Image (cartoon, rainbow, N blue to C red; front, side, top):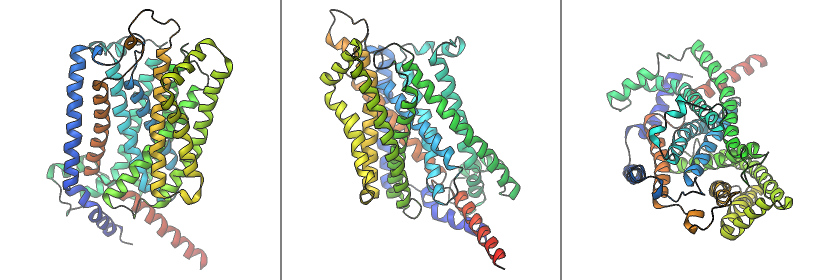
Length: 447
């Protein structure tokens, strides 16, 4: 097979995604930028007036910002873990979704920590975290873990982009601006797709795969310790680290399924993102949902059965103020995906995607119920104060910044898709090389 010709064919197939934007895409850009602009205005108001414009008060010092942070970091952990594991599998199916997962991982690690900055009342003192870190503080370790994870995942993503940068650099009939061609040339760093270069790049990415799996586990474990190492009711738990890891996988797989569906339908990529990908991801989501349901049951059952005063007060807060949120997060958000994904006949592309949507919404609410009710039931409650200072209700500022973070995530994803094919051309070529070599070896064995 003439692989150079095959590269040109694949570039031609994916070039419409790189060369021009449809009217619908332009409208999406406008909507996303508008949402981000509202978020910037909301941040300005918060920066000028302080946290009094939010729902955070003396009791509830954390709000939906910290929940968004946990949620996005969980997605990034899940993406890093799955990406690392996929590298050790052989098969053409993995190339269709590997790049999607890698991009989700890096963007989640960029957007997530921004919400931590929104929780800080004095951003002018932010540099003190780096100048005067307390090694005893889990937050210091969290910063170290997240920054290390971000750098590692970014390098891994870039390494997998290099072969495609080289292909796009060498394609003369690709109609993109000259500056974009120059960027391809710089980022390709002289890669010529020789056998030795392919082997070297494969070895480096293999090492990076193992490293990012370890870094992801460490990063989310440290995040769980920020909660579990306190004495707050509902947080002081020995299973929070594995519980957070399972929850991160649960939300991450759900977001990956939703993203696959949107990309598949928007860009007509049914040839590459096939039903087998959704069925495989659905089975993974089913297994994780069973584990997540088990951990959730264990956590709440132990609180109820222990009859500790503070835990009982926390459960009373949950059932009195957050009853329907509790039902959706811990019953609907777990049982509906299990029921849909357990039966083989129900595992269609749309039903798997629907199960993923329910799982993601349920997981976000679960994080909300871990953070807010606990802060509303402290060990030493404040006496004789206004109810709005005790109970938390997010303001429009917080919602505007939350939606701005989601919009920024989607916008960056779309911009990356305008710069490099979402289905890696180099991955398709590598798989075809592997198949050609395998068939050749079989032919020689049969002689």
